[in-house]
Length: 94
Image (tube, rainbow, N blue to C red):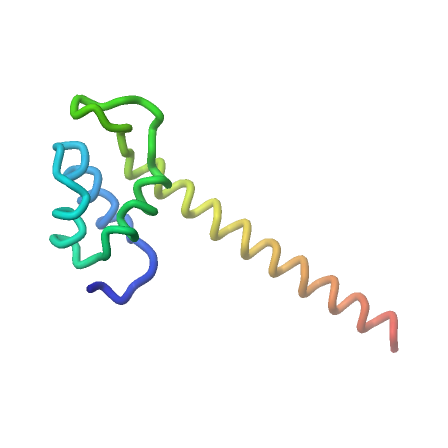
């Protein structure tokens, strides 16, 4: 199993190719060295809300990449704001 928590862009592209070609999630997970639940969670990030030729909701790797990046950036901004607030409170106490 892959030790990395997050999918990288190349892995998302591979997932898109396999999933959109009709491969079962269990087979995809095994070929990528991931747990099936991890693959399902990743698929949710890139769902297009449009049915594909296999009768499943389509997956777009670029959409998943943008959503993951946005989530990371939002967390970084929140952390930055929290640190600034802590510095401001500390300065008020002095």
